[in-house]
Image (tube, rainbow over all chains, first blue to last red; front, side, top):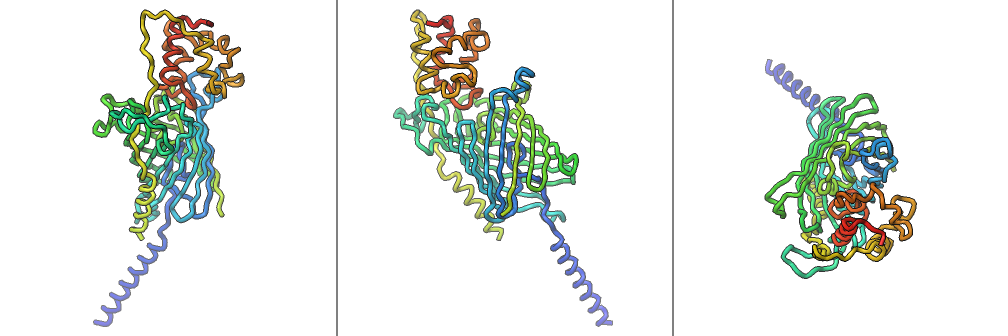
Length: 299
Length: 129
């Protein structure tokens, strides 16, 4: 009898251990977003190791002139960005890009700390993202071409290389809730090393992205970026008029390509520029058509 | 392994933020305008150089991209209701579009003194003098 009970217990233990093993081996990572870009914003997606990504981003003029310039398509080109991203080690993406706005050169890094799994043992994907952008305009684009380290300082100094730097850092959490719905939320911090007298150096922000799949390759996408007007970190008596940026788009994604066409009121493709310097509202005068194309190569 | 991952994340962020500075751009001093001063702003001697010195505007606006701001063509090109609003000078497109406080023109902008001079020229009738 004792032997039977012992055998039963052992069998139960082995079985439950086997099931646990099976659960562990059957846990697969979930692809929350097909592309590392959703319009201008980054998602938690990081390509496979040794993958190179190339991004072409373009924003046309605003749509306020109507048919006379084909809703901005024939208007003065608003912004263009060309970017390269590479994943040298698993979950770490390094990038470089050039943008027409302020002739920015941006260097970026994204690290995915963990990824959602299909068995919900990891319920969300979590990533951190940082961008260093360098303003490439000539010195005479900055009023007198000199800076002071504080408002009370009186001796101007020539603009140095690091004065041109600005930073954007973001923590993002995403989850694929159903086969058709993926959502990402995040918080960010933006810092400019050099600003005008009536501007702030620092800005916090909140972000939300969503993707609604409507066919195996097509999705409707939503972006919302909200600058947070926090009086405690403001250096100005009157808070600058930070405006949120929004985008509604359509994405067609395959394994190596993603094509996104959208309307947005964000002025640029560089995240710190969009957070700190968006003066446009999401209305007829502020929105523009744009597209983002990404292409991947595996090595 | 988790500690290594977290450390990598911290190092990436720290590297990117290791050089935060808090500088302010010194604006160009705009000379105060005396209301009694009737001296006219000269289009040829004061406005044309804003557009042309160092090809500041004419590196792009020289014929291909409107308006053409080269010395021979600039006045004819901007002397119309699209660019100049004589009723409300501060709403003139040639003043507002590259104004330092707007983001309509991304690449280059007037500095404060140049913007003030353009506005004064329009307020005085935007003459080809």
